[in-house]
Image (cartoon, rainbow, N blue to C red; front, side, top):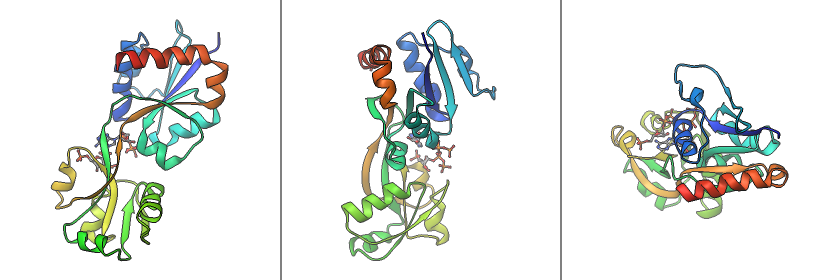
Length: 211
Ligand SMILES: Nc1ncnc2c1ncn2[C@@H]1O[C@H](COP(=O)(O)OP(=O)(O)OP(=O)(O)O)[C@@H](O)[C@H]1O
Ligand SMILES: O=P(O)(O)OC[C@H]1O[C@H](OP(=O)(O)OP(=O)(O)O)[C@H](O)[C@@H]1O
């Protein structure tokens, strides 16, 4: 039997994903060791391999088949636009993709002015402003701490994830518009879905039963 390989987004989703996996009898003790720098783990009994990748790279590993299965946020799936099957909503990492900024930016949004939008998600922002709102904007790509941008005058608004809203609040910003809901999804390589249909379908069925 060949190994089935699963790519997990390292960081806040990986441990929670493994907690769900344990409920369906898929375990990997080593992966829980936070002090370890190891990136790949094997469960010999189940012929499963797990690896920890940067969240935004998970869809790439899955599209190319380097991983049969991946677990990653819907934000990353939308942003990366890779070809693969999205099969289960794991209900983890729930948050919202929003347009946010100072209250004063509300006016600019309503009047469809040419504003600057800072974001880690340029494709999601483009799709939202160009295709849904038909508003021309300038998109500025950042890699983190997006909330800084409107404070220091890099942009008028941001497109980013909001969970509790405390990052926005503590920086004098607020949600101006909601784009979509986000949660972690299981994704599957299209060829693996056919070649390993029985094993992958069983994982999906077991997951749906415990969620
Ligand atoms: N505040 C949050 N609340 C809930 N889920 C979140 C939150 N921030 C991010 N997520 C979800 O968790 C996923 C992973 O986020 P995480 O912050 O661990 O990595 P990242 O920011 O994408 O990567 P990196 O920090 O390596 O640049 C995101 O793609 C998103 O789906
Ligand atoms: O609504 P909240 O509960 O405050 O959560 C939202 C924050 O969480 C994420 O940031 P992350 O911690 O991933 O850091 P980053 O800014 O470096 O991406 C996101 O980009 C927001 O900044």
